[in-house]
Image (cartoon, rainbow, N blue to C red; front, side, top):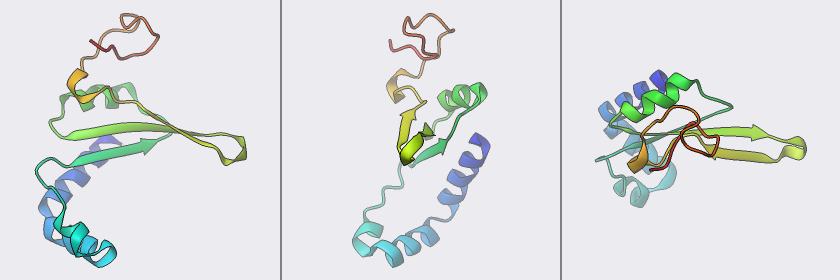
Amino acid sequence: MLSQAVSCLSWLDSAQHEFKALVRKVLGAEAADSIDWRRPRMVCIAAGFFHHDRVAVQWLSERVDLVRYRVFEGGLLSCCSSTPPPARRALLPLGESGNGSRWSVR
């Protein structure tokens, strides 16, 4: 999944004019003119991610957030970030975080 997200970021970088035209058509000129191309952000939403996806995100200079979702009975949707905060993307071995999480906040 992560390789697909990076591919989309690459396309977005090379197709800024087309993307801006689409935003202008759908959301209007104000929205199109307010796009900040300096540091795009990709949000990947899935039922789960592989360990390798979570590790790879820390090595990317692009902002990629991994969000897990779960659907409960009655249509209740839960979303949870699987990405550590950008300034704290240091992956520690399991058990070192003290909270059962794979990620540690330093």
